[in-house]
Image (cartoon, rainbow, N blue to C red):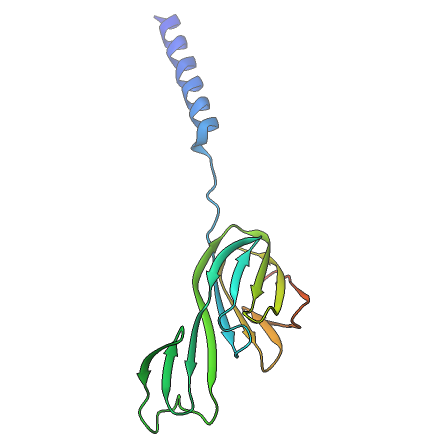
Length: 163
């Protein structure tokens, strides 16, 4: 009877060991979400690629000074007179749905219709991130950090640790 118990105990230990090595202790990588927002005309309908893989064009929104609202070149609405979104000048913006990435180093490229481009070399940590390019300010804002953005150059984004 003792031999059976010893044999059963050894079999249980081996079975648990095999289960652990086959994935019982896998740690799940935390998700990374990136949202891209563009303020200004130059890159508002740019093509976005990450690590050389094209993810498509940004959705361009234009509010004309007369109150007409265009989404990707299609008249979608006319804002009423006195609306706070109506301005003296046309307002351009672009956005892309949230993108899922793996954490680590990535190269994000924006290519405007006119051929102008810039790259962002970013170290992406787990969590949700917002990248906003402001044509007027000439900056990229990554979460709460601001970086100078000059079209044609590579912007290096290495968020500070400990946030």
